[in-house]
Image (cartoon, rainbow, N blue to C red; front, side, top):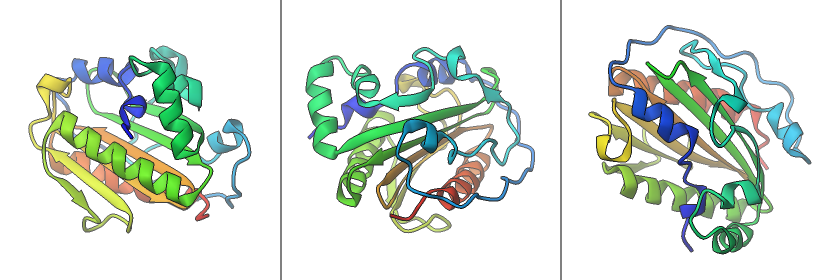
Length: 215
């Protein structure tokens, strides 16, 4: 099965293309995690997505992106692919239920993104996470690391020291994908250095996983 349907190529690609001279990041702490129950709707999942990031970047309004961020149903994700009908079948094979995307940045500096997706089974979430990480590593280049230090078990990390200009990433970046129960989490940070991008990703992954149910 191909994970091409879930590769975000709308607002993220547009924002990444604008990043050429990123400043450093500010310190910050995510708010305490609420008691998490398994979401039954996209809106319940939204309540579990972190409201801010460690770097303190400003939120990008969902409707400022094209396609919009926010709620993601299976048909929304399928439309990212050239063959939406085929990709809908792929997502159904994974047991995709729904997701939620959120972005932080200004369009001319550091950028952080979070995408949380919920599946019918833990196996579906794990397979989706592994396949998406492998596909993105192929798109962007670089060495994909499984279970890297300072990230929880079940995570994968891709670090781009110089970005990936040919793929629209014009500055250093770090990308992580993690499976947690029936959830798949993707976090991307673009910053002035791969070190600061990685620090942001690790902080955001930790804060977001705390908010998601473990089953």
